Length: 465
Image 1 (tube, rainbow, N blue to C red):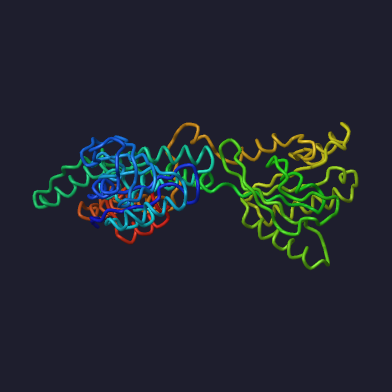
Image 2 (image 1 turned 180 degrees about the vertical axis):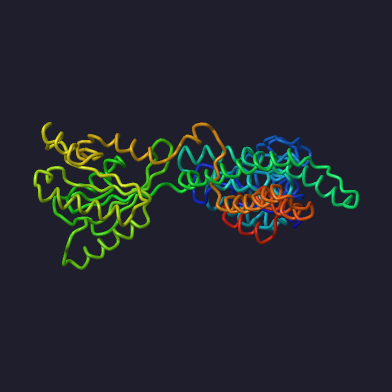
């Protein structure tokens, strides 16, 4: 896959703003930009300038001046793509952006496809494939944790760990292959004891990386939390308190929330997507019954369920009995989902009633959403469901499902190699499993790719990156 054409695209978000950046990349990028650029200093051309320099002037179309701009010049191979790159910083008018882009197209550029600048960076050896994918993750990161992971992967933390394992395995694979050339002499070039130790170590690293995907997936995509309970217990008030804004309608009238309301906040650098659901109760109202049906659908989708109750109702023994039955129903239906039992409106209880409630229902969380009492403690409790130890220790965390799949396949082949070593399998059969493990390692970093794979990966990028 060789790209010869010079490409152009808007590198900043579309729409009007203070400034916009238009990026060109390719062998004619500097020459094309130069043909449309008039420096404020006479006789100054972009083609004669040093790399990594910025120049003030105007973009002109014949006798027409389009805009005053700053032009940044990056010469190959010291650029993002590894090619000649020009970035034009112009004023952010939609009209100006399109006029400049259309001018460059007429001069010989082609519009860049999604992710094509980063694709060229990969093809020119500026990034490996996992680093290139981390660029997209960095752009889409919306909390501290996902940003931290994307930065680590873009800097090559994950790549270097995989590359090191692959190199060590490759060295032993070479020795095994060499033995096959001397099969008649019955010699061993690869020390089987050392090889067993290496395979065991690779297996442990792969298992750690695979296990980290559970945390990585949560950090990357956020944790959906369903807030459920009977009508008028304060679900919407709690959502507003968590978000610190009036997101949901609050009313004393039962059944106000007829549909689910969703919003996301960051707690301790982790994204949580809260879903305020319609109250669960028997109803003849057709619209409200549809909302209740959606509530159970959202519980199915959620990773954590917050079951909210009105603490003043616990004075009634029959309510306590019914409440405990409802809790058991949810636990039985969703045994793997963390369930937080929360009693709202605790400001209306005295100390004796609070003590009784805590003793009668262990692990119940007390709060007053209206007054903000216990809301921060609830956030801490939600954060405790996420294992952020690896994040704090700056360990490698896998967030990409493609990487996860390749790691699983690599581990499967490594387990075959381990079994082969334990059972004295012949070198030629060992070599087959080793080659397959190396293949899956190569899929992650991009030593082994296909046009279809690259197309799928870079199609998810934004234009201009």
